[in-house]
Amino acid sequence: MRHNGFRVLLVVLAGAAAGSTLVPSRLAASQADAPKPSIQERLNRVRTDLFSRAERIDEDLRELKAILGIDPRSAEAHLLLGIAYRIAGSPELVGEAVAELRQALALNPGFSPAHFYLARIYLDLGRAARAREELDSALVAVPGNPQFLALLGEAERQLKNPRRSVELTRQALQADESFAEARYYLGLALFDLGQRDEAIKELERVVRSGPNVSDAYFSLGAAYLEGGRVDEAIATLSQGTRVDPSRPDLRIQLTRAYRSKGLLDKADAELALAMPRATASLASPYAQYQQLELDFYLEQGLLRLQQGRREAAARALQKALAIDPDDARTKSLQQKLRTRKTGDPR
Image 1: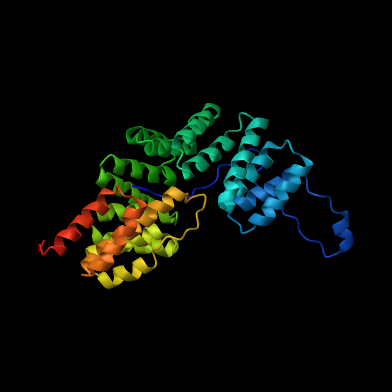
Image 2: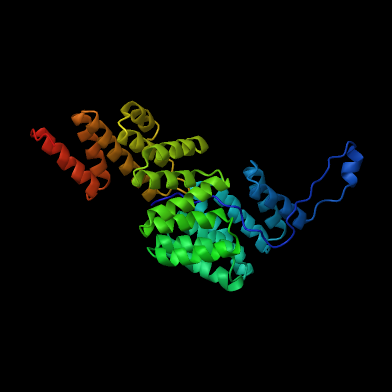
């Protein structure tokens, strides 16, 4: 089961957690006399912005660069700048994010949050082995950290080690049973092990626990669909599209669910909204975009075939094969289409 990465609470960094709130004075003289905030107070304020997902990313980037202009050896400032670049999401900033996190580690080799965020970036980029290396290093400094264990479990799952993933995510949950990210990764690993019913139970707990993120709805909806629970799949995937209307993979799965119920008009409406856009982001590298395109054209071919529109189905399948000439699903459907053309009623 694929997913786009579970959005989580950020790691609590070293230093004060609260930012300094400066109350504006009514008098210009009072403003002039007020002491300037210290570098640590400025860092605290930026950290609060980043952790609360405040819409101030451009201001935070400028502030962090200004702080580093004063103190270029601040490992925390380099860490926060790396996180800010990651949140900004622009593909050209991925290298900048990695460079800042590496600089934080050069200044403070034991700075485990920098390893953690590097691991997140590597997982986003599909480099699970590098993510595992970073998390192993982080766990040397803070053994048993549940966030690090959970992410290491996901790295192991992506490296085709689902049993190890289950072991690690269960360790993380021993420290905190309410840890939604660990439970989400546990559900994915159980699904990969073929334990679909157990996976569904874990994913249902994630959805019920309240973190309103589209990944959980996508994975649970896909698991319902695989298990033939189509009505539940439709309800869950529909909720996911309300959480994140822009996700094409949710729309593609919902198209599939409607099609399997014979609701072809609804399937067509979802498919019209599902076309992946060529706007790669940190969380959607080019390979993932290609996979989305392949899934889209395959589902389009299946839907057109069910609608009796053979020529449109053939065109969709040709587009799918142009993306991946070896895709077994597309080849099988193309053969089915050829068989129907020869008059075979199956």
